[in-house]
Figure 1 (cartoon, protein in one colour):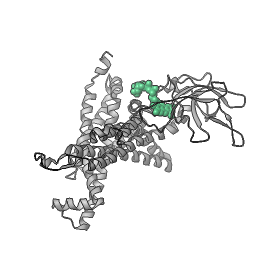
Figure 2 (tube, helix red, strand yellow; figure 1 turned 90 degrees about the horizontal axis):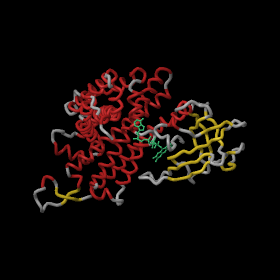
Figure 3 (tube, protein in one colour; figure 1 turned 90 degrees about the vertical axis):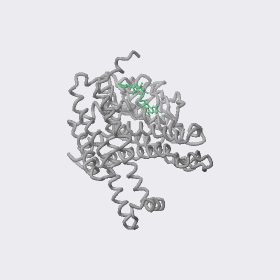
Figure 4 (tube, protein in one colour; figure 1 turned 30 degrees about the vertical axis):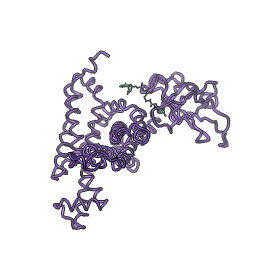
Amino acid sequence: MCLTEPQAGSDVGASTTKAVKQGDGSYLISGEKIFITSGDHNLAENIIHLVLARTPGAPAGTKGLSLFVVPKIRVNDDGALGDANDVACSNIEEKMGIHGSPTCSLVFGANDGCQGFLLGEELQGMKLMFHMMNAARIEVGMQGCAAASGAHQQALAFAKERLQSRHWKTMKDPEAPQVAIVEHPDVRRMLLTSKAYVEAMRAILLQASYYLDLSHSTEGDEAKKYKNYVEVLTPICKAWCSEWGLQVTHTCVQVHGGYGYTKEYPAEQYMRDAEIACLYEGTNGIQALDFVARKLSLAGGQPIKELLGMAEKTFNKAKNDPELMEPAWLLAAALKQVETIAKELPKRPDGIQVMLINAVPLLDMVGTCLGAHYLLDQAMLAKTKLASILSDAGVDTDDKKAYKAFLSDNEEAAFYHNKVQTAIHFGYRALPTVPAKAAAIRSGEKAALYAIM
Ligand SMILES: Cc1cc2nc3c(=O)[nH]c(=O)nc-3n(C[C@H](O)[C@H](O)[C@H](O)COP(=O)(O)OP(=O)(O)OC[C@H]3O[C@@H](n4cnc5c(N)ncnc54)[C@H](O)[C@@H]3O)c2cc1C
C-alpha cells in the first residue's frame, strides 16, 4: 500500500504523487513514497504496488486521490513478465524492530517511464484504499495482541525457571531456599495483568472479526448493522490492542529483571516489535480522532449505543454472582461515565477542544469497558463449565486444599478457574481507570493548549 510521502503521513491528502493519462489508457506515475512495507524484496518474482496519486486538475485533499496498480516488472499481454517498470527503491529504513519487514522509500518515474493502471474510477482512491485499510487495522490490532501474547507466554515460562529470593511466607528466614520468581506476589500481579489484557484484546478482536463475517453473510439492514459495529470497533481494535499490546510487552520485560534488557531472551524484541503497531495504519492518535469524531456519532450513535448496551446486559447478569458482583458494578460505573461524556461533550461550548485533547483517553475508556464486558461474559461461562467438572469429579469446593490439588492436576478446570480470576483482576485493576479518566475529561482541563511549547 503506497500512501505515505515525506510531507504526507497522517495528512494523506497532502500527497503530491502525479498520475497523467496516456493514449493507451494507462497512466504515467511520478513521485516519491516513503515507509513502504515490503516495498522491495527478492521473495517474489514481481511486486504489485497500489499507489495513491493525483490526476491533473483533481481537487485538493483526499478527495482528489485516485488508486493505481503499479507493477515493479511490467506484465506482457500473455501474462509473462516483461521489462522493468520505472520504480526504484532508494532507501531501506534502519528500524527499532520488525527487522524481518523491509520498509522502503520508492521513487516512481525518475526516468519518466513508470506505467500505472487505474483501479476503479478516478477520485475514488481513498474509498478503495479503505477496503484494505479497514481489514489491515484489525490485523494491526491483532499484531499488538500477538506480540503481547507471545511476550506473556515467554515471561511466564521464565518466571517458572528463574530462582530468586525466598517465598514471602519464609522471607525472614535466610536459610530458606530460593523460589521461582513466579511465587512472588508482585511477579504474579504482572503476569496476571498481562494475561488479562491479552485475553481482553483477543476477545475484542474476535468479536469485531465475527461482526465482519456477519456483515458479509447477512443482507439488508442486518448486514448494515454489523458493518456499523465493525466501523465502530475498528479504531478500538487498532489503537486499544496495539497500545495495551505494547504495555504488556513492557511488563513482560520487567518480569525478566535485567535479563529482559538483554538479547539473551526475546522479551526485548517483543517490546521493540510491538511499538510499530501503535504507529502504522494510522497512528493511535489518528485512530482516536476517527473514533470520537466519526464513529461515536455514526448512524445517529445507534451502533455504539447497542455495543455498550450489550456490556450493560453482561453487568445485569454478572451482578447476581457473588464472586463477580464487584467487578460487574465497576463495569456499570464505567459505562455510566462513558454515557455521560458522550451526552455532555457535544453540548459543551468548548466541546471540540475537549474532544480533541481527550480522544485517546476516551477511546481507551470504551476499549476498557468492552474488554471487561467480554471477560466477565467469559467468566460466567467458565463458572458453569467449572461447576460441572467439579461436580462430576465429586470435588468439595469448600475444602480449599482439595480444590487446589484438583486444579493442579486438571488442566481444563485450571483453565476455567483462571478465566474467573482473570475477569476479577481486570475488573478491579482496569475499570477504575475509566471514572478517573472521565473526571479529567469532564473537568474541561485544557492545560495542554495553554502550556507554552
Ligand atoms: C515500519 C513502517 C512501515 C510502514 N508501512 C507503510 C506502508 O506500507 N504504506 C504506507 O503508505 N505507509 C506506511 N508507513 C507509514 C505510516 O503509516 C506513517 O508513518 C503513519 O501514518 C504516520 O505518519 P508520519 O510518520 O508522517 O507521522 P505524522 O503524521 O508526522 O505524525 C506525527 C505525530 O503527530 C500526530 N498527528 C498528526 N496529525 C495529527 C492531527 N491532525 N491531530 C492530532 N495528532 C496528529 C500523530 O498522531 C503522531 O503522533 C509505515 C511506517 C513505518 C514506520
